[in-house]
Length: 156
Image 1 (cartoon, rainbow, N blue to C red):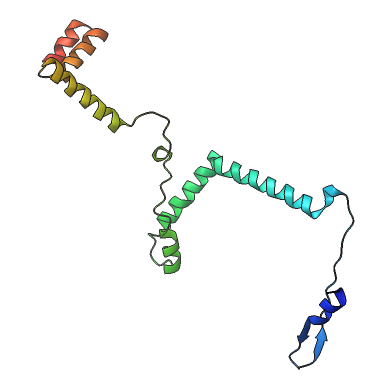
Image 2 (cartoon, rainbow, N blue to C red):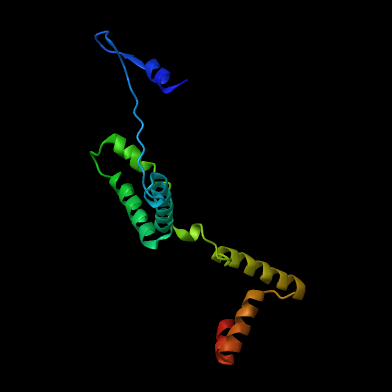
């Protein structure tokens, strides 16, 4: 179809039942490549992507988000706020922004260390027949790093 046929097919009927034709005009601007719309869109896309990554990874922005969510949590307790806002703010109560919950740097938690300690003590008691291996370990530690008198105080 040529341009005249495409334009003639786009007729619009007005409220008063008169008909008229809608014409579409295409304009093209001649400019250097670095001023083109495609180049501007590409620069904008990469700049906004970089800004988003910096915002997510920035500690200051993370703290601002944590404070905002804490504020929303506190606002839900105020009497007389609109129910719609209260419902919106309560949806954020499930967020936990404590980084220790999500980041593990290969270090065990205190609970895991206690479990491993108890397993080691139980295994030592089974293999040696010692009746109170934990007390023996405490005595040896104090004797090694302090003196015999301090170690004897552990036994008392």
